[in-house]
Length: 211
Length: 211
DNA sequence: CATCTTCATGAGACTTGGTCTCATCGGGTC
DNA sequence: GACCCGATGAGACCAAGTCTCATGAAGATG
Image (cartoon, rainbow over all chains, first blue to last red; front, side, top):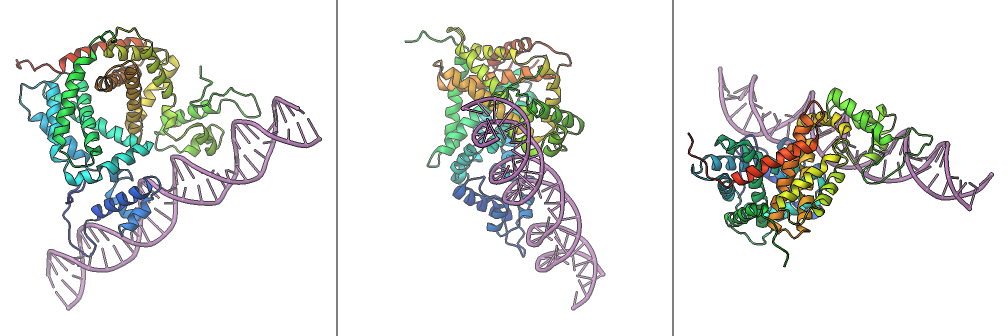
């Protein structure tokens, strides 16, 4: 139900004198408190206390307070990179990023869906969280751009297509998170991809005479 | 040489018992200190002292420390909006955002160019500044998207084109800031626009058989 | 059994960003 | 002269984040 892996350093849940899974306990405590009172009104000291730990330990597991909501993003960037590197050789750049977003399906399971709506609500409520989210998305775009360049896609095209890929991902994730019941991420991603292909063609079209 | 206008509230430089232009003095002091020692190693107290003011006054003029580097962005978003609203009715969405970026030419004058390289260097050096920059760019994209929707561009197309517009702006600004001598922003923007038109067509193209 | 090492943790001092309240004081107004 | 307005200073106060040192159980070694 919960990953035994932490962002950078893998660790095995050593059964010791301490209660196990400090990382998960801290995350659970934080999400509970955020759900009750919002992000800003909860202090890191309080999160740590509810998890039965100290503030210092909180910052050992999370680089800063927002990171409780954002950890695990590296995995997503890697998934994108690998999907693009491993796609068929006759795919267009747009199809490559489409395949990348579809490949994220495995990450967004039912467990992750449970907190997705809360996360979205919190991020929308705080300017500083919005900044972090924007940056994370830029990192995803850069990951795709790099993977495209590695396949000899021209620089300008790789830049643009990476951003479009991030937009497809963002739209698909938003809908996935907003859905009250669990749905397959791949279905939503495929749908957003199709819409984006149409929109890409539409960008350069002159407007029809209005009605 | 320096605007007499502050972000949200206009004020006139009342000649009174205080030295005028606190805003400008704070900004100058901050940029000097940042240039000397970097963003993180300078405290807001120190900035205020060099400007002959108190920390409290610093936070009256800038909502937070990073804002010293980012204020004035609202003007840019408004410029984009107005340019899109006022463009010829037969323009394609891509041409609309192109026109918007070109319209920013008036903002990027020689005075603003003087500190642009420093700003870029500082932003690249700090993760938190990178987040703020990413968010600001997302706001610009949203401004363009809104203006496109107001012209009856379809939602999906407006979303995508707004992001592309922000990318064009970002690339043009980056080159403008990096140029050691002052250059016309419009020239660079036009060039980036042309490249992006080509890249947009290239996104959907199958790769040529490699040599 | 005794000792040593390892390591996740606690305790708490410390710096700084950011908020808030209250006092100050010159200028303009009536 | 009495009054208010508005930019400012002083400084208390809170929370994020860093850092150092102590602790004590687990496991290894002898």
